Length: 420
Image (cartoon, rainbow, N blue to C red; front, side):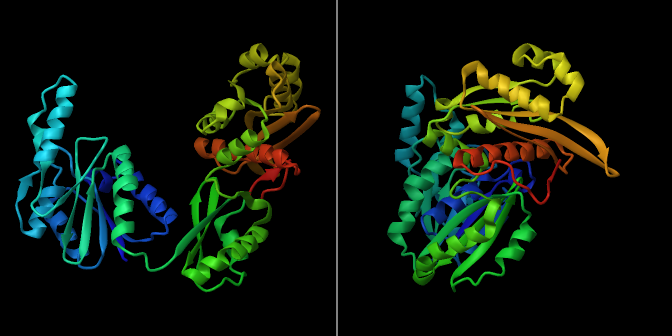
């Protein structure tokens, strides 16, 4: 089976909207062992839509078409599909009546423009949209089934899970068993990882891919075919061995998710004090499911007065050691941990820029404190962009906590980060 996707919308082509639907569905399909072969993005121009429907339907078996089913004039997917098929639009009475009932239940009269959403190509089969006003539909053109969905992400995702994937599985046999395994790394660049992994002898049918989304590099192992699928576990073990300390998660897409699972499994509590990261640590962890079970408190202190009042940092500590010092980070973490007697406390200090060995460096101190144990380090993060600096600093802090939870030394050397 050859499966493709057509994404529609001028706003996507113009860069005004990031196409998160396409990334999500590619990964979702791969989880089901279904691989997407091609993805095309086209604007809201009738002739372009007709052309791409006709062209791709001669090549693919199934095409997922996303967007262009709204009530406005620039939503032309249904009309373009009817033109490509050479048939009229006809009203889907069942969907129009459903829309009218929904508006009536809200005490509203259905706008006339919404009637357009009940118009489908004559040979189309309606596809239910349980959470929106735009129904989907599927239709056969040339050799392909084209499956149309709205572009609203929560509507699209529910329809893919409940309608599209079951249709693909029931109507089209997946001729090749495809598996995907992901490993998350931190601290080593993509080229260095590739240099090391390229030395491995990989069984036929297994390929290694890379996805960079700073501060992480994700290693993707694709296994295509039964023999490759059987060889995948042993290959994963070999890759893990080569990755060594750079491997930070097996199964999660971020260090925050990995730390969240470890804290939940071990029943440990956490408090966080942040200065230069400005809430990045807390935001990422609190976005994880179940984090309220272990997260005691987060304090963002970006000036001396707040540190003095909230964390009881004495003026003498600041004047003697400095706002970016190890002593400051340790005092922040230690004092915060005592407030609610958390099992662990993390702290990031202020950052300071200074010249070291003839180079301008941006340094920050990070401390991790538990009952009777203190780990700390001062690092030079070679990135000036604030969001990148905060992201890497947060990742180092998470990795310290992750390693402590695993019972391994929390502080290691990362090739691109200098430690003082």
